[in-house]
Length: 389
Ligand code: NZQ
Ligand code: ZN
Image (cartoon, rainbow, N blue to C red; front, top):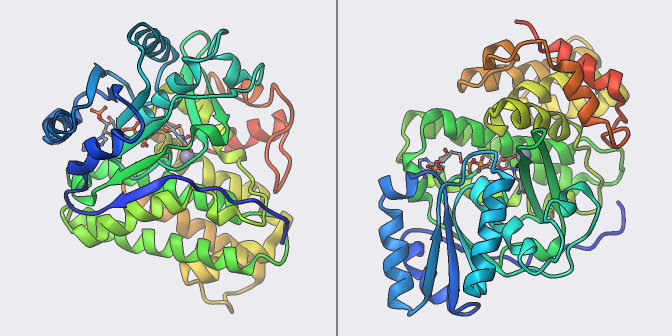
C-alpha cells in the first residue's frame, strides 16, 4: 500500500426533506449567492420552489443562472463569472447533477482569477483560491458533490477537459434520494455506469497490498449492480435509490483510492466521445470501459479474474484463469446492455469518421493511463474495437 493523504471535507446531509435545510447551510458561508441549475428538471420536480423558500426563510439574497446543459459549456461558465463579479457574489449553490456542479466549480475558480478560466483546464495555471460551493444533488452519477474535479467543454474545438484541485471540493452536499425518483431509466443507467467506472478506474491498479480498498470497491460495485435492477423496476424504491446515491459519493470522494493509484484512461477516452458527440458521460463509459478491459486484461489476468469472481460471481474454477477474466468483462458488458446502455459506437449513433481525431486529442499531452500506458495507436485500437456491432 502506498503512502497517502485523504481529504474529504464535504459535509454530507443525507435523507428525506434535507433540501429544506439548504438556506441555513448556505448562510454559514455567504450572504449573496449565485443559484446555479440546469435545463429545467428542478422546476418539474418542485425542488426549485423548496430551495427558494428555504433561502428566503434564511434571509439569503440570490441571483439565478440556469441553463447548464449536460457536458457543461465554457461559455456559460464565463457568463457566470461576469455575473458573480458584477454582483459581488460570495457563494455558489449548485442545484443539479455533475454538469451543474462542475459549472459552479469552474465559476468559483474563475471569479478571483485575472486570466482566462480555461487556463486551469489546460494546465497553464493552477487556481490558488475559489469561492465556496455548496450542492443540492439531483442525480447520483458523477460524484462531483464531494470530488476535487470539474469537467468543462470548450465549444472552441470541443475540448472536454478537467481540473483537479482540492480547493473546489464542495463545502456541503444535500442528498435526498426522493429527489432522484424522477430520473428516467436511461439517466439512471447512465449514472450507474459512471459510478461503476469511478470504482473500476481505482480497482485496476498495479499497487499491491491493497486488499482493504479492493474489498470496498467490490462491495460498492455489487451494491450498485443489485440496486440498479430494483430501481429500474420500481423508481420510487427509497432504500434502493439511497444505496445508489450514497455509493455515488463514496465511489469518487477518493476513499476508494487511498493507498493506490488508479488508471483513468477510460475516462480520458470517454471525454473525447462526450466532448465531440455530446452523449451522456455514462453512456460513453459503457462503450469504452469493457473495450479498455479487453485491450489490457493480459497485463494482470489475476486481477481481472478476481474482479470476475468477486463482483460478477463467476465460478473460480471456470475453464481457465484467462477465461474467468474474460467472462467477468463480458458480464460487465452484458450488464450495461441489460440496463439499456450502448456498448458500441454505432448504438450511440457515432460513426467511424472521427476516431483518429479523438485518439489524437486524447493523447496530445502524452500517453494516458497508469495500469497500462496507452499511446495514440492503443486508443485508436480501442475505439476501432467498438466502432461496429
Ligand atoms: O438539466 P436538467 O433539466 O436538470 O436535467 C438533467 C440532465 O438532462 C437531468 N436530471 C438531473 N436530475 C434529475 C434530472 N431529471 C429528472 N429528475 C432529476 N432528479 O439529468 C441529465 C443529466 O444531468 P448531468 O448533470 O449532466 O448528469 P451527471 O451527474 O451524470 O453529470 C455529467 C457530467 O459530469 C462530468 C461528466 O463528464 C459530465 O460532463 N463528470 C464530472 C466528474 C467530477 N466533477 O468529479 C467526474 C465524472 O467522471 C464526470 O466526468
Ligand atoms: Zn465519470
